[in-house]
Image (cartoon, rainbow, N blue to C red):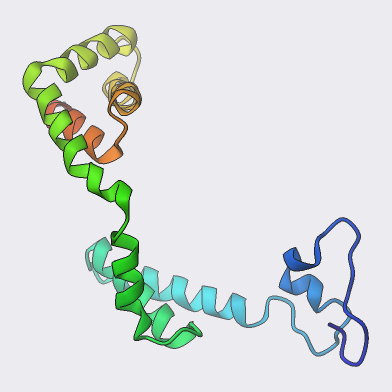
Length: 166
């Protein structure tokens, strides 16, 4: 809204989808970018700084997320465990162990080896063929299996030793 004036209307944009910069259009006190840009730059610097210190990526992501929630989020810090629990308490996550079990059956039965051999016949003559074999195998196996975790497990068991060998 303009200070002391009617709300800003833009044709073609629903009023609920206006960008913050468009809402402040014409307000001389509004700085372009403002706090959002500073918070983004600060978190980016924290992220890069922690990476340069040699921390594992999981800890870097966790510390950066904690700083964001603790200092810049309007939600109280006590909501974090509840949000984490609700994110893990979903029905589709219950299927992941069964997808992993199906992937293990396919590895033990040799299906993934046949799949990798077929992809190898298609692209082995090109430079970077093993990487392409991995991508093609993951695409097909992911379509068959339905789980990216199970795909990474089934294809990785076979392809990672071959990649380390080359």
